[in-house]
Amino acid sequence: MKNLVAAFLFLSSSLSIAQQVATPTDTATYIKTMAGVSEPIPLKPTPEQNTEKNELKYNLNQSGSHFFKVTFLNQTWLRFNQSNPGTTVISEPKDNTFDIGLRRTRMQLFGQISDHVFLYFQFGMNNFNYLNGGFSPSASSNRKIHAFFHDAVGEYLVWKNKDYLKIGGGLTIVNGLSRFSAPGVSNIMSMDVPVFAQATVDQTDQFSRKLTLYARGQVGHLDYRVALSDPFPVQTSGSALSTYGQNSIFSLKGHHKQFQGFFMWQFFDKEAHQTPGYNTGTYLGSKKIFNLEAGFITQKNATVRVASAGDTTYHNMNLWSVASFLDIPLNKAKGTAVNAYLGYFHTDYGTNYLRFNGIMNPASGVASGYPSGTQGNAVPMFGTGSVIYGQLGYLLKRDLFGSGNGTLMPYVQAQVASYQRITQTLGIYNLGLNYLIKGHNGKLTLDYQNRPIYEAAGNQYAPSGRRGQLTLQYQVFI
Image (cartoon, rainbow, N blue to C red):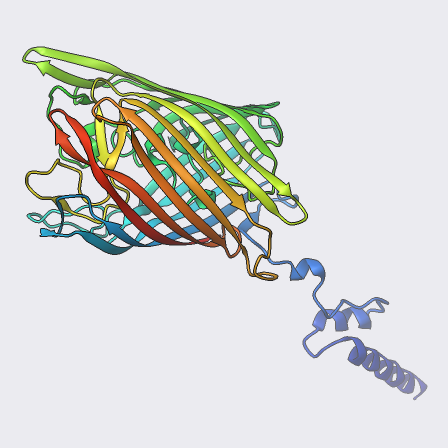
């Protein structure tokens, strides 16, 4: 009887304690209390549990040095464009257009899966509007075919936990010429990148990616990458082939490798070096960056022209640039920062090379009598000559509209080019405003572009006025 009473008193006492420290679902706390643990499990989440995560990352080891990560990016454009002369949309003349499109929709999958092995994939699509990147009035097309692998790379880290040397290969954007030849598009300062710096985009590459063997690393203040690339034949671009003439085009005959290199001298903080090749657009004041940069791309007999019957001349492609890049905080307490870039590009594709291009072009054709390829928002984007490109942005104080409501970052861009087949220096100017709702993870950008338009002048193009384009972009990235 005494034993029964003692057991009952012990059970009553235990239940009383459990009621004070445990909820009906707090099984772990109840068990620990019954076991005589003096400090019950807290009922409220710890600060660590309350911390909001900003990435989808799975750690493969306890320290997190081995991991696998997934990111998603979507950039939606709403755009009003003043059409270039002669523009047609589905065979009808259009003085202006309004379109809705996906500039970029992508996912990245990557990770450091051992001390020495890194894996990187990127999959997605670009320039998806109602024309789906192209339109033919006489042939059917499939609007579901434009998602593809941008990158598929395996990389070997030679020294554990050191960025001195990484050797990689696969389909990759690692290349030379400039930081904007391999831009990290989720964190660019302006609405869009200066596409002329992606020198062979969709001609002898796959949206700036090539099959490449490369070495990259950071040694002291030097960030470097060198690459040997195997360019695609221009016949595989999906576009109608150009015919040989007095102006250089990418050669339809022969195949030669590309050699590339890009070098940055980093005076202050080191830049991000995790994913292969991609250069950050702005750190929004989180780092102090000032770099001097230089890069090149060269390929033997990349282009060809026929000045007269029997006179076929092949040209080497030689491109190089020098630039400075600044991205530094001005007032850390307020969160203000500045972003600036100034670069000179020497672009030698061969005599008289010129290519018009319009980003996510809202037009499908050009009327008879107007220069081919000049419809919509197209400009002479790539050509033999030289380009000066600059941008400047100012990040206003954090929480400009109240705690958690974001801030603003206005910017300007200018691209000034002198090409052999353009009679005058051309200028393309952008003025924009970022509303950083949650940094680069959620932002609205309003961008106005003013560009030149052209008419044929013999074998050259002469400016005949200017047109404008107003775009609202909504970016979500995680």
